[in-house]
Length: 352
Image (cartoon, rainbow, N blue to C red; front, side):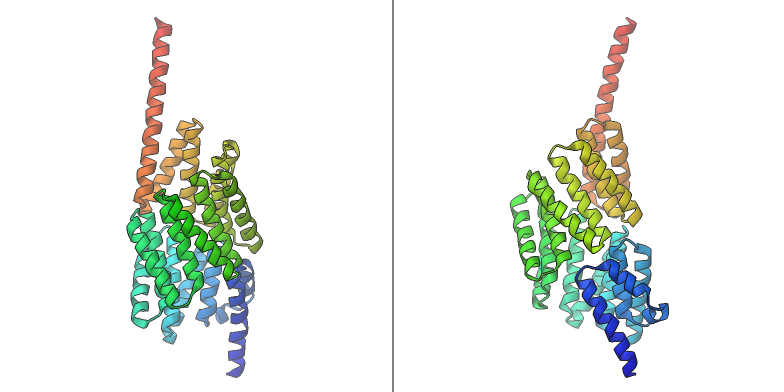
């Protein structure tokens, strides 16, 4: 029994250190070396494996191991582990575009965590529900969820969660074009990420601030910060975060007026997003590319790409994005009609 306990603790401690430092490729590599049965028998390692797989873009395998972790925790009667696994299942569902399924998981886990006094899980679930509210355009609810998440994280003394929720607050304010509030939230997230010395998290919140800067009209600093985030996540082997950073970098490049380079960058992100099976990232990159193409006068191409993104955002219930894309498509159709009318007038003149 003592030997089994030493075996269980040694890899778990090492994997925990690797995961907390953002070295997800190394986590995956290390756990793939373990026999299947040993991972299956350890909900902690199975859940770490699921989380790391999600970060490197293996969504289906990540879901498989998250379900194993959830079942193992329930069999063992480990309620805290069960709630963590349920939250991770929700996160994987969200990244796969199954938004309502994700919301159900987060709601269930939050309710159970409140009953259990597990404020870390309460914070995680509130934060994730805020992300869904933001996606669906309910910005007031999103701010409320993030505020609740910050309070729960602070009660549990979980600073990493506080950082993530301030980062997400910045996104919600940016969506409303409240750039002063957005930068205040992003600055706080960056400052607190520095204090806990989490390289991966710092890169994530720096990228978030870069996207705010690009939207607010500061493309030079936005590009510098986005490039910093890309380099960090690339070095850590976090291919999903790297792809998300590259989308933000493309926005910064576009904002600086280098539209041809930005178009190439956006198209690269769409390829990566497909490979990583990240429908939300794919739809977001297609949306950004469609806007860029409209600005460049490539109306038909813009409308075609916008329709593809519209289908995915509609499936997710992202009502704000749906309205914006519908407006872009309508504008493209009016441009085509005006061009056709102009061409028709010229043809009639030639005939006459």
